[in-house]
Image 1 (spheres, rainbow, N blue to C red):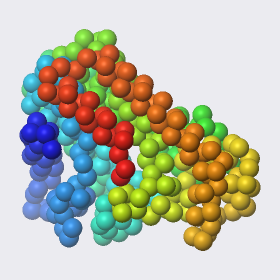
Image 2: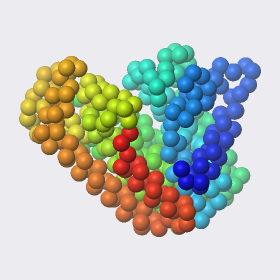
Image 3: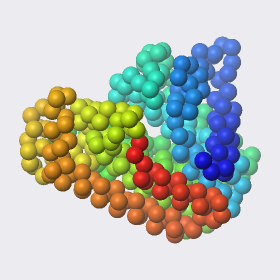
Amino acid sequence: MNNLNETLLTAIEVELRRQIARLDDSHTALYHEMLTYHMGWTGEGAGPKATGKRIRPLLVLLASAATKGEWQNALPAAAAVELIHNFSLLHDDIQDNSETRRGRPTVWVKWGAAQAINAGDGLLIIANLAMADLEDRFSAEIAMGGSRSLQETCLNLTRGQHLDISYETRTDLEVGDYWSMISGKTAALISACTHLGALLGGADEGTQSAYRDFGHYLGLAFQVQDDILGIWGDEALTGKSAASDLLEGKKSLPVLYGLGKNGEFARKWRQGPLTPDEIPGMSKLLEVEGARLQAQQSADQMTDLSLKALRMADPQGEAGDQLFELANWLLKREA
């Protein structure tokens, strides 16, 4: 890994621990443990695999440095976006009845849904307090602007989650519905990361807009790629079964393309829940009917738009180089 990225990731972890230490109190030791466990720091299996890649806070700091800002000053915002991401994951696990996260039992499995909901709320509130720390480092206008932007992002996250949940029982979905959902559920926070970094780095409004667009299209491409990997990915690399998305009836982009063709895949899908034995054949049908190719073309289109916006933003220095490298890695990943 690049030395700059190592430096930034180390600083991010220190800041996250500092923020979550607000609950490090003898009366709330168990509460604090729930958060440190979810963040991947404590409990069985703790370590890099349990923490995740910290991509979102890294985007904040790289964008800040690439606009010639002092990235250290943006650390509270970087921590805030990662805390919000983890808040959404914690609640998502409950709503999806997911028993594992990154190879470990989820918080609700270990401590119950009620405590897990409260732990998620705690992460969101700490994120807001982290954003308030910006007041010590930036003008009131910039600090308030950043906080407002992140609050609007959180609202968009809930919009996307609402759509995702409601789509589970709908049979009239079209591809356009998919883009509306992932614009909130996935792209909103990634777009906020790149915009926040540019804002705190002192970029002008035009450059901030380019960074925002970069993150938006990066998020869309990331999700489409995730959908493709969810059906045809290498299980040894992705860490999850390639059958899970189809078994769960997930309305991913390849599935919506397949349903739109009204062919053999659509006929079998509409007959009811799939069995494990049917998954290989259904995956093959999607591919034969062209849904995989269409999804990949959509991912490629979003990738092109993302990189075009990044070139418009004209990131500078080593951080700028790392932004391009990180974007290319995310857009071509196999896991």
